[in-house]
Amino acid sequence: MKPIKNNLSRVWFLGMAWSRILRRKWSQFSIIVLRLLLRLSPNESQRMFGLTVVIGIVCGLAAVAFHFAIVTSESFLIQRAVSSTGLSQVLGLLGLSVLGGMCCGLFLQYFVPEARGSGIPQVKVAYSIKGGVIPLKTVVGKFILGSIQIGSGASLGREGPTVQICAGISSFLGRMAALSPGKLPRLLPVAAAAGVAAAFNAPIAAVTFSIEEIVGDLDQTILSGIVVAAALAAVIEHSLLGEHAIFLIPQGYGLHHISSLATYAVLGVCAGMAATIFCDLLLGFRSFFQNLRWVPEWVKPGIGGLMTGALALLALRWLHTEGVTGGGYRTLSEALNGKLGLQVLLILFILKILATVFSYSSGGVGGIFAPVLFIGAMLGGIFGHLDALVFHHSINDVGAFALVGMGAVFAGVIRTPITSVLIIFEMTGGYDLVLPLMIANSISFLLARHWRHLPIYEALLEQDSIILPHHRTATHPLKELRVSQAMTTKVISLRAAMPLTEALEYISMYSHPVFPVLDETGSVVGAVQEATMRQHLAKEATGTATIESITIPITTCFPDYELVRAAIIMGESNTHQVAVVRREDNRRLVGWLSMSDVIEAQAKVATQGGEIGRSIIPD
Image (cartoon, rainbow, N blue to C red; front, top):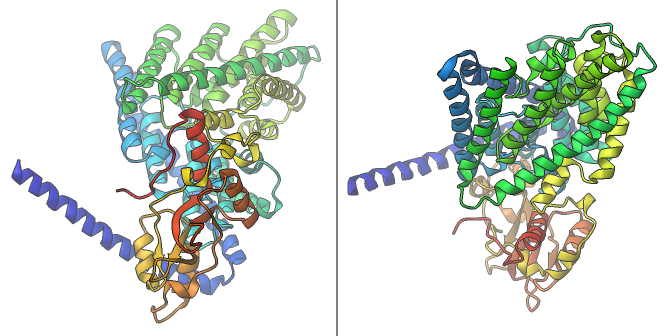
């Protein structure tokens, strides 16, 4: 045992040494790049515009790379199982789904927990609460684990993960370009639009989605950046994958019979019901898996994979069709072309809902965009057949109903009414069903919102006791809490006399935009932004500057303040963090409070009612 321990120790120390060397080299490289960037674009507004262009291009490439990674993974994994026969098909479908889920579960639990889920709720939290910071390891984890899980058969889509990957890239680029903490969050909607544009080949819908879902309202200060990035990402996607709509549909689709409007209206009602049922099942099973204490966390995605594999096997053996695993785009395209019968549409509608619920609720990596579109197309196709039976219309219009159903269920689940119309137009290249689509989408959206006020992404965050600032309706938990219960007590601080080069190397392992500065006596003298440190070091030639030269005043509060009062102070100061100091000595730092600490404290009170307080560095 002793030689093994010695060897492990050597490997550990060697790894740590290499890590320090790489961090130092990367820090030096980033300063060189920033120095060049500052010469080309000396003010922050110019750097923001330059980053917008870079983000559009890089996110377009990242989205295409993620698409190819999933296609490659599927061809090596789940498609081989689907194309096999007999016992090999059974073992392949079940085994791959379980192993893929458990493999991702292990990495999610121990290495990249923020890569779990679709990614859009995490981007919303980063935009509203965390100052636009998304760690780069989350981007890498999302890319790899998403490719593995979707490729191994999970009933999830690539679109949500693409948004988080692109947002994480923009966050990293913004920090490297030394953007101020106030500017950094503005890059996330820009990246989200680029990700959606490249994933769906829908730049106009990407703009509206980013405004409706990520920003929450029309912020004209970032609108131009969103438009530019979405356009550039779409150009990249066109260049690499070709100029074509994702789904090719017959050109004859349109409103050929006024009587069909009644069927489209009923489709809107049923789409709203289906959206509500889907969301309730998703949240209900997610709560079930979260409360399944006796099962290890990393095993739960494997359970979801087992159920999804069984459902996929059922569809193959019973219906001789695919579509249950992944986004199901191939089968979805058949539905849009009216090639699926009534029985197949009905059974796939049910199986896809169940498979997506199990895949997502068990803690997998992947989005719900594509599955929701699939579910909507199956429901719409069912109504297409019913319209033909009741009104004796042509069976060729079944695909048109599938197209409208796709948008209607999307509107009911995602709750982005403008995007739900535009995305269907851009994904299919068909504009002749404007009236039916608007009727069905509006009815579905209004009914789903009436029955369940919160849209799915807000509901998922609320289930984790995270309420975004612009959606917070009650602050009573914050009134019951004190700052001392929520603040971080082990603070990462910098000494005023510390050289900038040493300070940057020290903080390179942490993803925080602002750090408190202490003098030689340990008293707080202000704060320093990582962005300012990088800018100053890039401009300063001698390399002898210290933290003291760029320290700025810091907002403070006392430990006995109500937490809601501290949150108000942050809002009035336009900052995401404050220093907590003693009442008897207002220069003695005792803690650090960020907006994410406030949200976490509220969540713990709502779910546990227990002790609050955490450390952001290991003991």
